[in-house]
Length: 134
Image 1 (spheres, rainbow, N blue to C red):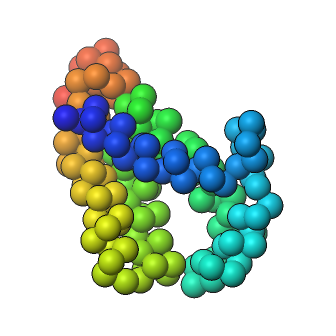
Image 2 (image 1 turned 60 degrees about the vertical axis):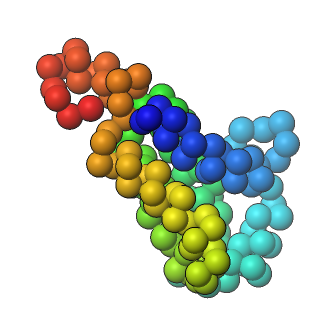
Image 3 (image 1 turned 90 degrees about the vertical axis):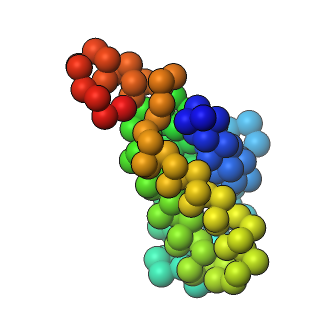
């Protein structure tokens, strides 16, 4: 179940990441994102020039880490915080919360409490080091 939850949570943010970069590139941010963040996401408490790269690179890095099962709890927590920021400052309504945010928070909370599961780099590291926290 943890593998499925990791893939599901990663997929949500990976699809969002893909909308933020220029087609055919990995990390080249599409300039329209700055316009969108400035005009449609104006409630964010940080400047657009900082928010766009932060969101883009977080939506790139954390899904990859989740699929690998590396730093799973940290990645899940980071994406949960991102979802809460979006909920509070961008779409502060119940429809958004019960449509999108609650899914992210549920999947993230599950991974935060249970860890990456058996099929993960975290579990491999735990086996090698003798730890029981994967």
